[in-house]
Image (cartoon, rainbow, N blue to C red; front, top):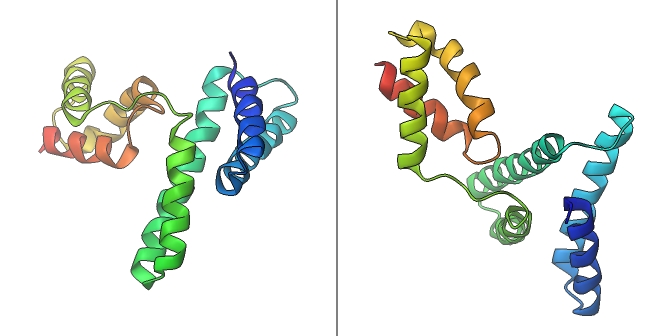
Length: 147
């Protein structure tokens, strides 16, 4: 079942169950997917769909951070709920140990020796963990391995 089919089924179910928050999030995801499909002029590949989902997660995490800083607990709860719904459609996330192992392998593959090689390592790692690991975690682990 494709992501769009899954979203349509979940949307119908959310309507039946009168789950307004879930329905709103599903509609936002579908709109983002459709906007990208229009932008590229073709149906999205699985990788492009994953990019859209990753972008949606990142936007919500950024919003969550800002709302927490501002002390807006009413909005914090709303964003947390949205984030949970979006994450249902993401692939299983890698653990920190798994990401660390991938970082170690990539550092060895690229022959990186210092922090000056960080860009080269990040460019090699990100396609491997796209959608399965947070970029900030990857960045932190790469810095630790290169220092």
